[in-house]
Every structure is written in structure tokens, then in C-alpha cells.
Amino acid sequence: MSSDWKPIWQTIKLWHEAGREIALATVVDTWGSSPRAAGSMMIVDEGGAIEGSVSGGCIEGAVIQAGQDVMTSKTPQILDFSVSNDQAWEVGLSCGGRVRVMVEPIEAKLPFMDKILSAICPVMLITDCLSGKTSFAECGASEKSRLQDKDGTLTFHQILEPPLKLFIIGAVHITQAMVKIAQSLDITTLVIDPRTTFASEARFSGIELSTDWPDEALAAQEITSAAAIVTLTHDPKLDDPALEIALKSKAFYIASLGSRKTHAARTARLLAKGFSETEVARIHGPAGLSLGAKTPAEIALSVMAEMIGLYRKGGDK
Image (cartoon, rainbow, N blue to C red):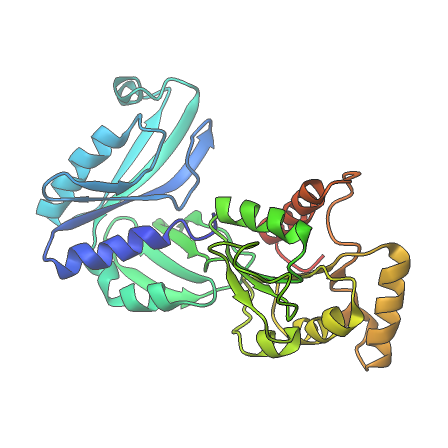
């Protein structure tokens, strides 16, 4: 999901340390039926080995050849494939779309490699598409990768979002369904529940568990703008302390399970604790989209869908 760039950069690091030549191909602009979004990446080495993709496979051959060229010339290329371009038909892009791909030698980006891999907030690489000159900056969570043509200078602003982290309070039946969805989306998950009968390896095989009290467990974590916190226990002794930590954090999504009556009581308790109405309004309660969900799996889906929708749109609500 948000972190599909990270395996590419981990491979760049490995290949570079092994002394391999590398060309980086990045989708910088799309229109119509292009299968990969702006910011999607592929790398190729001098032997033709590749990682990642910039299409559904229809233009990779041309991109690999361009990669070989730029490793020799050290000069970036912009490849333009569309149905109005004869080359597009040659490579199989006949389904009514357009994609522009920048292919460049990796050297200009290597100084930022460690910063990219260790980033805990969204970062941006700004690349001059003609020279390959690159700068690095932190950026807001709502920014998106884009191609910018300003005063005759073409630059690509690539946003690298950190991996999402999901903190779930309560190792309940809904949680079991939520972690399966999270795994399919490559979202790192920590399930927190001091009740060891619920938070057991038998019920959550291969999932990171904490049996600390929720506020203590969350206080030990770095909660960034790429974090979501969901409470599912219905028990104020467990949910409320977690929400107090969540409301003081940068988490982009905070949600609590329960009826409207339960949420009204929860809101009153947090207001009495000194939180403002604006702060408490960050909580999505009842958690999840209004799908008419009944089963634990359906409820899990509604919560995860609400979380992903909010993340992609940006902001708390």
C-alpha cells in the first residue's frame, strides 16, 4: 500500500552496496487506463535484473532498454507512451491510456538513501527531469506525487509515505478479521490487550501482541501521522486510557467501537478529563463506514475501509 516504495529502496541499498550499476524508472505522469500511479518505481541493473514495475508489463521492455542507456550516458530520459504514439503500440499499450516514465541513473539520489529508509513521516524527492538533480524534504501527509512544469523547468515531486501502523486495542473477534485485512494491505499491526486469554499466540499467530495496559503500550510507541488507533473492547478501563494517548498524538485515524449511546458517554468522560470538543471530535465513533455491517468480518471491513479512505483523502474527518 502506502509503503510499496520501501522494498525498492531496500533493494537499491543492497544493489549499491554490492557494487551494481542501477537505473531508476519512475512513473511521473498518467492519463486514462495506465495501470500504475505516479510515483510507481522499477529498478534495473547492468545485467538486466529488475525489481518493481511501472505498468502491467506492457512497457517494461522499453524501460529496461532505456535503463541500460542512462547507466552509460548518466543522463535522464523521459519516455512517453500513449495510444497516439507509434511506440505505444509496439510495446502493447493499446488499451487507451498514457504513461510518462522518467528513467535516470541512481547516483543523484544515493545521498538521501538512509534518510528515505529511516523516515517516519512523509518525505519528498524533487527531481529535475532533464538533469536528474534531486533535493530532499519532509512534507505533509496529504501531498501527492505530481509532475510540475514551471518556467520551462520540468520537475517531479515524488511523495514517499511511511508504512502505515495500526494499533488495535482489544484482541477480540473483530480484531482477528481486521489483522487479516491489514496483512493483505502490508499494514504493520500491533494488537494490545492485557487480557492474556484474548491476546494469545493461538488466536493471533504471527501478529505482534502486547499484554501491557493500553496507555502504557501506546506510550512506548512512536505514533506518527501514518498511525491509526482503534479501540474495540467496549470497556472504558481499557479504551479510555488508550484514547487519551491517541488524542494527544499525530495519529491520522482514531476510532472506537460502540453504539451512539456508548460513544456519547465516552465523549462526556473525555470532556470531563479536560479534552476539548474539537479534540474529542477526532474520534470516529461508532467506528467504521455505515454499511449495515453485522458480522465481525463485515464490521472489520467497515473500519478498515473508513481508515483507508481517510488516509487517502487526508485529515482527521
